Image (cartoon, rainbow, N blue to C red; front, side, top):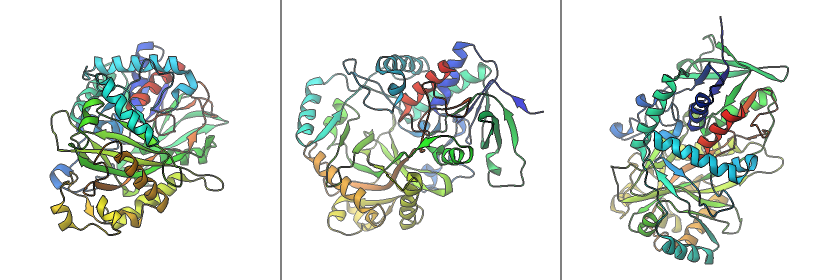
Length: 476
C-alpha cells in the first residue's frame, strides 16, 4: 500500500528545512515527508581534501546534495538588512509577494531560529559606518554600486553543526525524511497534484528498478539550484507555467587578503554591482570569502563548477569571491540552463574534467597560464586540483569582456583588485530554473503544487531560501 502524506517537500535545503520547522510550530499537519537525493548532513564529506582532486562521487556529489543542500558546504553567510532601507537589496523576490515590511519580519524570525540552533551572535558590517561610506563614494564615481548589509557568518564547519541540530529537531518532531532518494516524476491528474514517484538515488539511471509512489494533495518543490534542470523537465512534462529565466555565468576570483583587508574588516562581504563595458550587462560580486578556500562541486552529468567557502577556524591568506554576469535571453531562445551547461562542459573539457585557473595578467597578454607560472606566482591557488589553462577559450566574449571591465572598475575602488597575479577560476555558474510562475501563496497553476527557494527562481542565498520556507508553511 502506498503512503499518503499531508505534505511532501522535495529537497532538503534551507527552504525545505525551514518549511518543515514552521509546520511543526503551526501544528496543522501530522504526516510530513522530506525527500532528497543526498545523505544526512553528518555523513556528507568531500574527499578532495585527501585525494587533492575531484573524484566525482557516485551516485551524487556530497557538496551539492543532502540535508541542508549546497548551503552545508558554503561558508554559511546569512544576509540580513539595514533597518533604514525601504528595499530588499539581495536574496530574490519574496518581497514582491508579501511586501518589504513582512519580508523584514521573516528575516528577523529566521535569524532567531539560526541563533536558537547555535549560529554566531556576532554581526559583520555594522561597526564601520564612516569607512564604508568612503568606499561607497569611490564606487559611485566609477559607476559601481556597493550594497552593504549586516552579515551573520556561520563558517563552513559551523554550518554543519547548526544544520545537524536542525536535522535532529525535525526527526524528534516526527518529520519523516528519505535520504539518498531521487524523485523521478510528479503525479498530476486533471490539473491537480496527486503525489510523487521516487527510487533510490543509486538506481536513478536504472530503468529496470520499480518506482515507489507517495501520495499527497500538497507537494512543495524546494529543489535548489542543483534541481533546476530537473524542474525544467517537470514544467515541460506537466504543463507547469514558467517564464524564461536567467543564468549567471562567470568566474571565481582569488586575490590576497592584503588587497581586500579594508573591505574584509569593515563589511566582511562587500557586494559590488554595476553595468560596465559595452554590453551593459549586470555584473556583480557574490559569496566573498575572506581567508577562504576555492572549492569544486559536481552537478548533473558530471559538470564540475567552482565555488568558494571560508571556515571559522581554518584560514588561508587569500580572499575569493564570484564575479557573475547575468544573461537574460530573449526571443526565440528559451533555454538559459542549456546554454550555461554548454559553457561549463567546454571549460571542463579544457581542464580534462577539472576547474581551469588562469592568471589575470596572462589574459591581458593573450596567453594561457602554465603550471610553472603558477608555482612562481605571488598568489598561490587554494584549489589544488585546478588545472592551469586558458578560460577565454570557452567562457564567451561577451561574458569575458564584462568581467574584465568590471575588474578594472573595482580596481579604482579597491587598489590592487586588478593585479596581474590575481587568479580567475572557471566555470562559476549559478543555475536557476526557468522561473516558475506562482501566485501570492506560492502555488503553481497545478492545484496543490508549490515552488520555493533558489531552484524555481524565487530566492538566492541561505537567508531568503529559509524565509521562503517559513512563509510557505504559513501559506499552507
